[in-house]
Length: 144
Image (cartoon, rainbow, N blue to C red):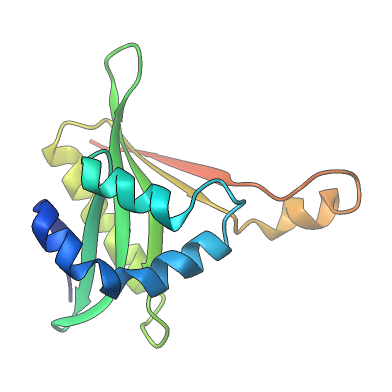
């Protein structure tokens, strides 16, 4: 059983930020270089992004960072900007997190959930050596 705890209070985020640095650095190291620790911190402190602590059996197990976005036609989506599961934590926990995020999206009136990842081996193999650099693959899920 997992529990997601959103960190709305900036004072709490500031006091607890050191617990997230290792995970943020790993996420940033596995990105395409489009963010930094300073940028993530500033976006979280400004309220543009929201940090959620993941707890399994009351033990800190990782985090997700989300952003609520609205497109020009007024539709909203909840974007999972970053996700991190601590080493030693069952990787299937992330799929439970996605289910929780889907419920959260419903609560805030978002019509879809969006997730980007760099994990798509098929295209990587076919395009490697042909001038393409690995970027993100995006997944969307309609929320009802």
